[in-house]
Picture (cartoon, rainbow, N blue to C red):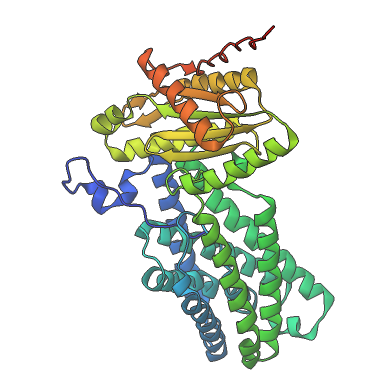
Length: 430
């Protein structure tokens, strides 16, 4: 599942605005329409399936036991916290059994319960994100539940180990995962159309996590079908796996800049030092760029810091899209970015810097009825030419950046290399 973090929105003059009180109104209109449509569809599904479902105490007891296990997982990982941005957890281990073992209306209510606990016990995020996550997960679970019960009359057959029902359960679990990912991905792409679909769908790590969630959900469903008491045996491994997953995500989050998703200054320096040591050992070339957004303060003053943050995100996204996977890119602070280019000579470094300058210069951030455009200046330094260690390279690139600003900005500069002093002829004696 996707869990989103809190985003603080302030007006420029400090006066509370409607968008401050209702952050959803500050989002792009297509995103607002999409989120409202998904939530409305979820409400309609709850009303429709709720009216046609006969409550049975066994179902209510099963639902309560599964939600209780989910609550224990949330409490067990609460002290770890939750990383900012979109994060993953293993709560599908409890939602999926609800979808497979109980009528569809329970699958619609399950995420509401656990999202509420996440909101009040772990991290308070803007409300519309929690509501949308609940609706997306609920609709995905409801669809999987309808499909599963369409082919399996008695969910209890899962506990007998029969092949066909288990295969149908696996298919329903895959459907649940696909729908949930699709609904979240559409929202992410609508919020930022510059993000590629590949970036908001799957990577290798996400696929592995989806497989783990699927296996956990099926296993818990089988144990729950055998005896509700067996949930006590499934709970500890799920808690341990979830804590391990959140711990890994928090470690990754500690290395990244919260606004741009790039490496933060400390993490970038560690990665850069490693690359420099490797380049010394192998004799490879290496270049460093310092990039600064021109007149960034004017953007903040004219349009507010929220738009300024959108510009930073746009520049960071452009940097990622134009650089190689093994290039080391980070945010150095404020409106400055740093890029290390392993294996690049001075000509390639200049070409890369120029390409970034042109692409970012053509980039536009939509703001109300206008477009905000920015330019960048860049300084370039080459290892063994302008310096032999990270400090020397940063100093040389920073001096080149300062020169680019002096010359009018929106340009790339390379520091001049001082020629070596002439050698004096050795004195000879007769």
